[in-house]
Image (cartoon, rainbow, N blue to C red; front, top):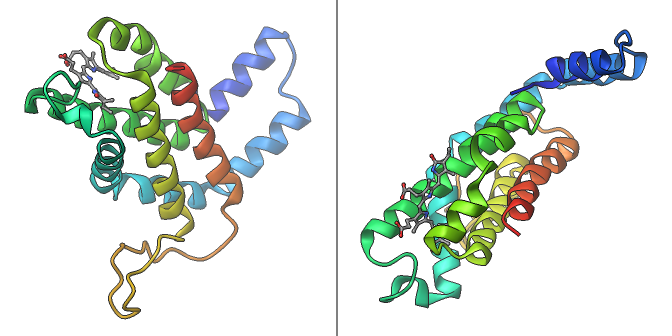
Length: 186
Ligand SMILES: CCC1=C(C)/C(=C/C2=NC(=C\c3[nH]c(/C=C4\NC(=O)[C@H](C)[C@H]4CC)c(C)c3CCC(=O)O)/C(CCC(=O)O)=C2C)NC1=O
């Protein structure tokens, strides 16, 4: 498991080279933008149960066979396992975003997951759909672009009240971890 700093060391060492100016520039940016990164991680972790339950619900609404006899979210034991897996995946994505490196997600969550799912008959495409909904809602939470209710006074979705700024790079990076999960199951 690596983070942005240990990744720079490992890649420099692999070339028996000193840390280069490119790596230093990128680490300088990682430090300078550190508070933004922490806000982005917090936007995900503070809303995790909402993000997960919304995604699994959306996945089921689009494919109600999942909760009928023979579906992989039936009976409740499997529904609970599915929600738990959503929490696990989102948790490892939040670790990767904190570290600025995907290795924790790869090594501790995705390694062997596709094979496990195939063996258990967990549908990969449905899982991918749930992860893509989690991506959309996490993006909205990081960007604070989550929609409000029709009544402007009644905001249905929680706002994080963070300092406004450009978080496009962090949103893109977070998005890449969700995409990584989807392609690992593809
Ligand atoms: C290290 C991190 C880690 C991961 C990632 C993990 C995943 C994981 N998910 C499992 C099961 C499962 N996962 C699901 C998930 C779903 N079913 C659906 O229809 C949906 C598409 C989807 C939710 C989005 C279900 C239903 C099971 C139970 C399958 C069964 O027992 O038949 C199992 C088998 C053991 C168990 O049931 O606990 C593992 C190991 N466990 C871990 O420790």
